[in-house]
Amino acid sequence: MAEKLPTMSAANRTCRPAIDVHHATAAIDKMLHANVAARTGGLSPIALSQVWWDWAAHLATSPGRQTELAISAWMKALSVANATLTPGTVSKDVRYRDPAWQVWPFNLFAATHKAQEDWWAEAATGLPGVSSAHEKVAAFSARQMLDMMAPPNSILTNPEIQRETLREGGGNLIRGMQHLREDTMLMAKGERPAGMENFVVGKTIAATPGKVVFRNHLMEFIQYAPTTEKVRPEPILIVPAWIMKYYILDLSAHNSMIGWLVAQGFTVFCISWLNPDAKDRDLGMDDYLDQGVMAALDVVGKIVPDQKIHATGYCLGGTLLTIAAAAMGRDGDDRLASLSLLASQADFTEAGELTLFINDSQLALLEDMMWRQGVLKADQMAGTFQILKSNDLIWSRMIREYMLGRRGEPNDLMAWNADSTRMPYCMHSQYLRRLYMNNDLAEGRLDVRGAKVALADIKGPIFAVGTERDHVAPWKSAYKIQRLTDTNVTFALASGGHNGGIVSEPGHPGRHFRIRTTRHRETYLDAEDWASRTKTREGSWWTAWSDWLGERSGAPIKPPSMGAAKAGLKPLCDAPGEYVFQE
Image (tube, rainbow, N blue to C red):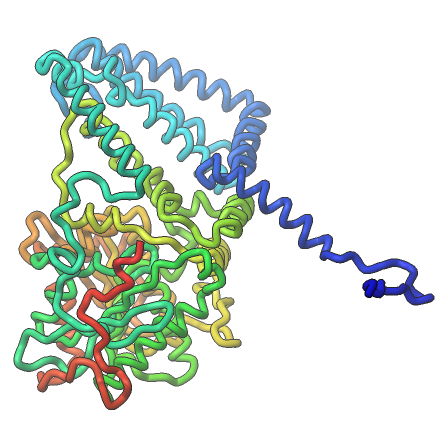
């Protein structure tokens, strides 16, 4: 039988299109943008061109500024000549610490590069009319180009590489080419970098004994076995970042924060997040709150009933936990005994150089790339962090491994860093737009379960940690939790960076920290004043944190059972579980 065709009414002589034109044309745009992103590493060429035209147009119409920069260039050229003729005056930059950089012609190369850096830093900033955001990107871009062309990066201008090549008859270059070939092959296969074979999850790292006591689609929940006869009544719940695997806090036996807390007599629980793939594209912030933090709190309440919880969050996990704590305070949920935030941010107005990549143009391109993939891939996120610290993570490694032919000594932190994860399209888009770009959490516009949250609703005491060299969550940004909340805040500033400053076990050589408590209603100190008035202590901040937790905990009691079979929480498998092995 022939199919009956739809007819048009007298009132409407036009047929409705078989497809939605808007969505169809939008999909064309998204595919084009995703293809562009694949070729630019996710960076928006339009955003970069806007920076260039803003800077160049204002400079072109500022003859006085041009004259000033020309004079500066001439003065810097004279300083280069002086540095070349005066031994020992080359830049103190660690890239030039080899004594050979102090003699001609290498001192000329180093001095010229330093003068170029200084001139471009001057040229890219302080130009009236250029937006602050564009000024920062211009300075960053100039620095990246100069870092790439730095004299240490070439065998033609690096005396250390030349000396080693002569000494070994080129053996270092042969080894370097072998290292490059090996790394390229491993990367193409999606395998771990060379030298990581001794770091095995569940055996040598992420090996603190425990049980997975709960699992849903988004996370596995681990309860760690006690190692003391008695424990504090209040358990510790750890919410790690989902950008990497949780075991940054459970590395080797000597530097596992989780293992150390267990040894101090605490019952410790930790979330192990799902490594999402394309089918998880629609997981959003509400899912991570409900299926993650809130589900974990419910499980802890069943295993350790009638006890308040010391909630601890690291990096993005700390931000998510802060949102949860604000929502709980708003709703009268008083299950938290305290809140510990490790290298975490709640205000993103000064969130470091990562914000250089966050604007409307950049996010539109990134979202279209994730729209096609369903996730932000691990290597795409890793590339962003490498750019932020290109000297440490790209160029110095290239010199050491591919030109000098020396493999770096592998360690557990490097193994963890190589075990990266993906991020779902919806969640990552919401996180970047609502928090990084719009700063909705700090400014009271973030909606959780149909109502706005305010950080002033957080009731319990807070222990916040920043690290001195953090390029992901700068300590001054983490410090803002003092101004945003209306409770007692103890802030610790630790030596080290975003990861190394947190994984700072007692006995680690060269560690120090500063710590001060700001009581409720006390006069606020800005970050610089706080630092100048707070004395430095030698050692690890972990011990001060343990004391702080202990002061807010009851007398030790018998440890709880592993899981709660009667409540349907029978242990499912041994820690570290299954999700941590997802590639």
